[in-house]
Amino acid sequence: MNELYNYINNPNDPIVNFNLGLFYEHQEHYSPASTFYLRAAEKTDSLDLRYEVLIRTFSCYNSLGNRNHTCESLLKQAICLCPKKPEAYYFLTKLYELKSDWLNMYTYSNIALDICLDSSSFIHPVNYPGSYAFLFQKAASAWWVGKPFESRQILRLLLDNYLDKLDNYYKGLLESNIAKIGLLAEKDSVKPYTKNSLNKVKYKFNSMETIDKNFSQVYQDLFTLYVLNGKLNGSYLEIGSSDPYKNNNTALLENKFAWTGIGLEYDEQMVQTYKKHRKNPVLCVDALIVDYEKLLQKYFPYQNTIDYLQLDIDPPKNTYEVLLSIPFDKYRFAVITYEHDYYIDMTKSYRDKAREYLYNLGYKLIIPNVSPDDRSPFEDWWIHPDCVDLSKLQDLPNIEKTTTSNIETVLFN
Image (tube, rainbow, N blue to C red; front, side):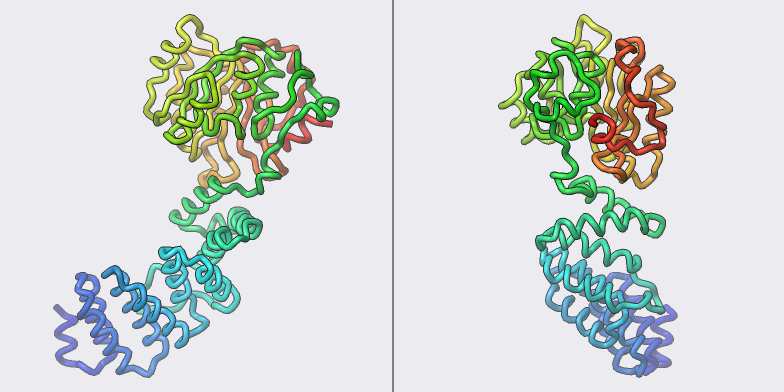
């Protein structure tokens, strides 16, 4: 063991002490590791080394668990020693995150963004991802301290300007957090329809005047009814049912137009709520492992054309995997709304994969990149040309597949 041999010969050398501490830390012997780290700090005049020693000693105590007070103290000592170095701030915000101490997490993220320089030059690198981490920490904590607008603003900033800098861990966090809270407040992301808007609608269908309100997030139910001209007694397969009414694409179809169908939802509590309020069945299942041919044979035994397919689960990879599981060789769907979540897909690949797949099956993309605003494309709307009256589609705009479709502009005057 060279580290111990070097220490025997040079017990007062701070670097030798540090390296021996590092050796013990790697062996998960955290007590002797901390001892030699602190000896290194005692025997050096270098602020940089003392700072690194405090970070490494924090790492040892953090690995032991249940040492929050000591860990917090070590990190604050490091900040006092070198207040413009970022690593101690970062680990401190992570410590506060584990304790759900959102105000301190927000405070120290803010301070770090204001005063910290680039990462330090360490003898042995620590797991500090970079300054963008403070933006994410600030966004996450802002949500919990009553600043949802600021939280969404920062997430949008990360998505637009930092995507090429994020490591895979933070890409995953960014994607999942945007999926949970969205980049828009509900009043901006949900586009409700009421009878008062009838005169503004560009594309009308039979019995539309009888609709008092809809339930979809951005008019998916109205689009489906338009393509099928207000069809009664239609059929649907709803993958990702979620709430029985809020942002639901089939509630209007079922309640007003007597459609029947089957829904799939992973959240058991949501399924129970759904069953209380809706007539058509919903199954509590993992959509990724369903045998869709057997499912469709059971619920649609006498038909091979189903009027509407909703594909809406998270993340984009899962939605695509479900798409591949649908037996398109045996069943056709007149209308498909496919949620690709392109705006938060860190790979920027699943939308195009899904499009190629559906194009090859003979489906036609009618409205691409549906968005509640001008920059959040999350869904494609498709039809099968053999299952709909194509004359209904002649008036719809011809939209380039790379264009973001602000759905308010597309469907309303």
